[in-house]
Length: 310
Image 1 (tube, one colour):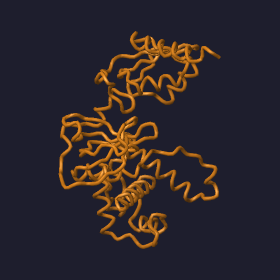
Image 2 (image 1 turned 30 degrees about the vertical axis):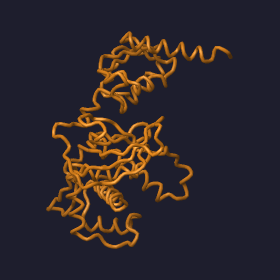
Image 3 (image 1 turned 135 degrees about the vertical axis):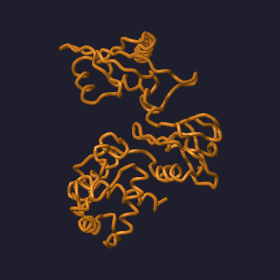
Image 4 (image 1 turned 90 degrees about the horizontal axis):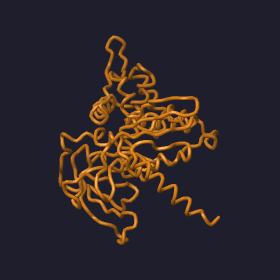
C-alpha cells in the first residue's frame, strides 16, 4: 500500500513539473528529481524509470507526455485536457500546494487548509484494484449499524469520488449483487485484495452516472430520485456567490435584477442537494417544483417549532 501511494506521488510530481514547465529536458527533470522531497536519497532518475512513469501516467490518467526531438524537450501533448480532467486538475493543485508548504516551512502556520479528504489511505488500493481488476474484501460498518464488527463482503469498485471532505467508492458488492452502490471510505474498517478478478463494465461512465446529481446520493429509502427542472430565487449577494461558484454543471441564470436572480437546474432534488440549498438560509426561495418548495416549507416549520420555547 505504501509503495503504491509513493508511486502516485511520483506520477503527480512528474506531471506537475512538466505541465508547469511547458517544455523541459530530461537533464532538467533529473536535476529537479534530485532536489525533490520525494527523493530522500537524492539519487538520479534512471532514464528507464522515467519512461516507465510516462507510460503508467498515460495508462492511469490518460495524460500523454511526448518528446519534441528538435529540442530534446518533454511536454504534455494533451495539456488542454487537464482543464477538463477534474481528477488530475485536483491532484496537480493539491501537489502544488504541498510543494509550496514544504518549501516555506516558516510560513506553515500562515497557510490554513481544510483536512481533505477522510481516510484517503484506502484510495491507493482501490485505484490499484480498478487498474488490475482485482476484487477487494471489505469490512464495512454503516452509521447506526447494530454490528460493532461491521459486515464483510467482496467489492468490485467502478470509480471513486470525493465529496464534502469524504472519499467514496462506487461499485458492486457481493452484499447487493447487480446493484451499483456508494460506500464511504471512512466507514471501512479493513480492506484487502483477493485473488478473484473482475472487469469494470465497458458501458459504465462515472461522469454520466453522477451527471444529474449533486454529491453522492442518488436516492433515498424509496428508491432513486429522478432529475427534473429546479428553479430557485436568490437575493443579489447569494446570486454573486452562485455565479462565481456554480452548484452544478446544469446551472443557468434565467433572470437577473438588482434585487434577485432566478437560477435553473436540471438535477435530482436529493438529500445532498437539499442540504446544500439550505446553507443559503433565507437568501433563497424554491420556486419549482412545488413538491420541493413544500419540503422547504415543512423544514422551516420544523425549525420554528424547535425554537418555539425560546
